[in-house]
Length: 292
Image (tube, rainbow, N blue to C red; front, side, top):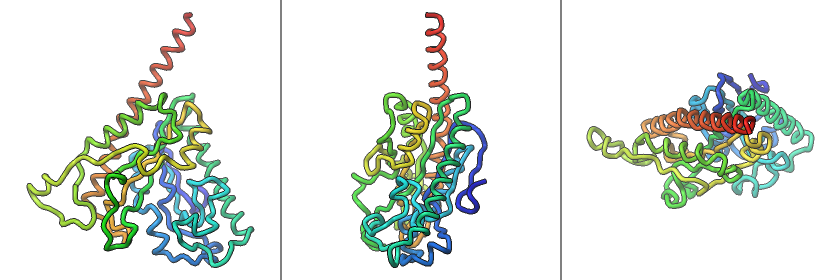
């Protein structure tokens, strides 16, 4: 289900929902006629392959439209880029976009958030807490294909954005999620490296570099979840550095990518455990209150 071909919703039940809102590269014909930016330029700033990460959750939403038509991780008034300052210095439109074209894109924005509200309402049936994995990827070779990668000190392989999260309430979920990401060893080389073999390959595996709020603190979607479902919804903005691919050509390093997927899948049992603990604590508090 979804809004035509703009996104796909799969509902399998359970309190974990995975989203890939920047995975898509499609642009509707009406908007495409006004675009000056080329497809390969859009690709560099989109989040390819993140749709594959949503398989870890029973419920998922994968958006097929490019963020250059409509960015669903920005507030409504900023969701359709107006200037190069909104789009990493890129000129998106040949001329200012006609208001009617912009408004038709924004109608889709409203439909997306209506669909998301309905999905999360069902995920939180009975008031149960739920977790949203807002899945993204980010660039670290902005100087071009031959440029060295950005300093790892400020660019973790996985950045967990929790800037709008109530850390006191959800800290257990965040800490367990980060710890479980580190339990799966991943091929160390990343794109550009020479694939090792045999014993050397095993020696090259190590845990992911996972840190919180280093490059990103979470965007509009996270803030929206926390405002729409206060105390019930926990949104983790998960940014995977594009060390698993060549961000300029799209070539993917399959062993590294498989490790990233396995690491994310390893987090789900722990998230479910933490949510169960929260529900148990809540029931006990209610009983104590009733007795008192």
